[in-house]
Image 1 (spheres, one colour):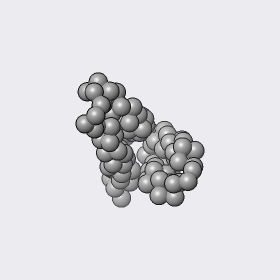
Image 2 (tube, helix red, strand yellow):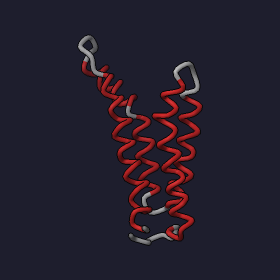
Image 3 (tube, one colour):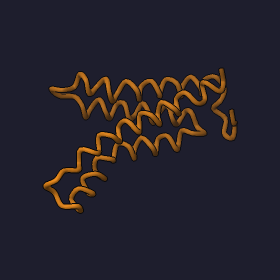
Length: 118
């Protein structure tokens, strides 16, 4: 159970980052210059970079992961609050909230010590 609780939030985060990164591919089109497309692609990857930084900090510190994912959930909630908020809310906020809860459960289970490996 400890190993599952260790790898489950990290695996969900990795899949979530890959899923969010797919949305950056809409930056490529036939009319724009290559430089413009690369800049737009990097701008579209900012949420993936933010989630990756949360995952890096959370890898050995589950409490940092719980707080980081919770903050990302709050940020996503603020950003998607609009006319199309329903589906965007489910796609963006629910996975990060799930990861936050799983990281918190791992921390409360006693794996919050540094240097503890699965």
